[in-house]
Length: 182
Image (spheres, rainbow, N blue to C red):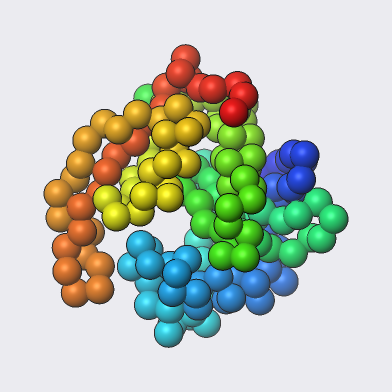
């Protein structure tokens, strides 16, 4: 499903464009941004092409939806977010996101994530949204908790990252728990 364009106070959330590959390469080559992704930052050229194909694959079906994040006054990719594994029968999905490092600590991801959560609960009819976060990713955990997510458990040695197994914490947010302001 092609994502609708959504305006927030400071952001435009929009479908991916082919020109986004330039900025996508930049974010995928940043080891600080990609530390918990498992992607090799040295393969950022191939990874960027793969990501764009994945965005288009999500948009072509109904199992996911992905938005590019750009500043309202400058239509360049600064990150992306969206829903994966949309399960229409059980009305749930998983959320994932990333943001360029020079846009960290400005509340932009909070603004974007809060907006798509509202969209998921109202427009997609979701009852539950989950997120999988590496146990060492304290910044992402803090963001999710701030938005009302609850820790549901830990998947031990769930992913193989950089030659070792990593634990993943599962967060969940029910529609009735969604915060309308923060």
